[in-house]
Amino acid sequence: MQATPRAVVVVGAQAAGKSSIARSLAMRFDHGAFVDGDVLWKMVVGGAVDMGADADTEADRQLALRYRHGALLCESFVSEGYIAVHAENMYGPAVEQHLRSLRCDRSLIVLRPHPEVIERRERERGSNAYEPWIPPGGSLLDAITRFDEWVADIPRIGMWIDSSDLTIEETVNVILDRWDDATIE
Image (cartoon, rainbow, N blue to C red; front, top):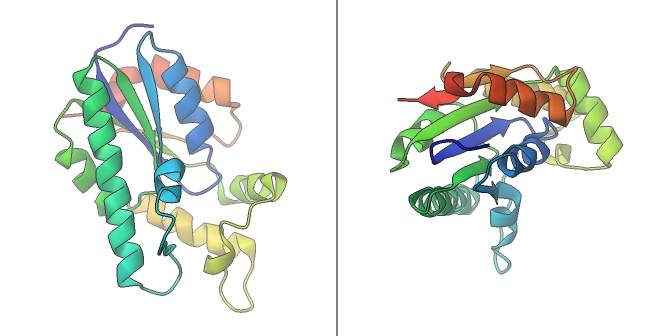
């Protein structure tokens, strides 16, 4: 498929399907690139500090660096004629700020499956991504619900999709069918 080059930022809670959907979406374009926030996260190998339930200045600094490098990669791909699809863990007002900082055309896809669906997916993939966020005496679903609240705090821009009952291919088809809905002016 041909489309005007742009950065497409795909956000949602962990296990919402961001990476799988973003990669599949990028593959649908004649010139598509996949920018994986998880790969950017893993690039810091000495002194890496992960985000956690408690505030940490170094973790915040590394997260901001990751976002900035994702933006630079997107801008570089777009300048060369690609649709750059960037899957990232980003929430609340930071999403709109990030999009507005991009020096290229841009779109936003927000994946928001139900927390119970995310819980099932998280268990199926055998991840412990939510472990640091589980409150004392709480459950995995409690942590996921907290992330879902952060997703809900994203300004109502771009395309929002409840992908609870959709496969990866079906979700990508919805995105392509509603392509213009995702554009950020």
